[in-house]
Amino acid sequence: AVARDSAGNTATASSVTVLVSNVTASVNPIAHWTLDTADISGSTILDKSGNGNNGTASNIDTTTFFTTGRIGQALKFDGVDDYIQTSSATVKNLSNVTISVWFNNNVTTPQHMVWEGISTANGWGNNVGSEPEIHISLGRNNDGTIQNDYVGVSMGNRGDGTGVNCEVEVPFTDIRRWHHLVGTFSNITTSPSCEMFLDAVSQGTDTGTVEALDTSGYDTSLRIGRSGVASRLFNGILD
Image (cartoon, rainbow, N blue to C red; front, side, top):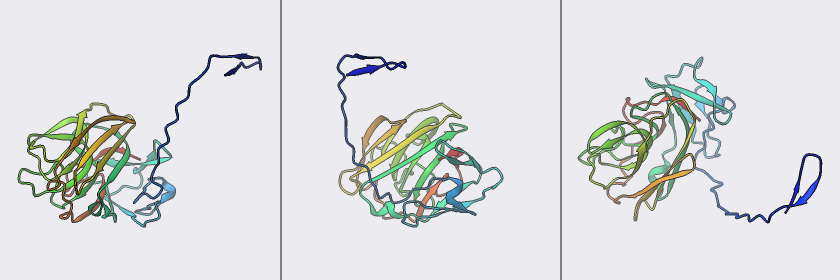
């Protein structure tokens, strides 16, 4: 290889080995909400995927909602009643799902960034398996006890630590800094597995059961900033 300094002098450098890994990315996402001001019209959050899965901002103070994001603009959620109801209900019809978000949280109490499921659910299922849902969130369910200071991805209908849900959670205490969270859920209808990435680093994998990850009972479209019931709302910035 040839090295060149600022004066234009050149010299032969040691050989350099470059490994290129080609990754095929989906060019047809189901939904893409940039949360930029240019892609928001009144209370309508436009879906830039072309699939028309627009969202509606609820209980939003437009004088404080917009802020600088990780990429372009972003939206601030007050942790009280701010959320976005989208029209995307496609998750229940898929075998493979990936959800990603940039987040900047003010607290590490249990709260949901992205959620879809049954309208009575509040994250992490329940002990009788009647609250199916999928979400990426702060907090976790530890054998029926909801705990602070975790970040994770979860899909399933139970919350009693039986191991039937597909979920990955790791300790997390950081606040007021940007992080990128991705949850992948694969083979949901046959042999469910999931993986979580935090800031592009895998945090682990898990497997679940087809019965626990059954989406046929979902009756609410995807939401940003809250779950089925009006609690555990996100407090911070999403992009």
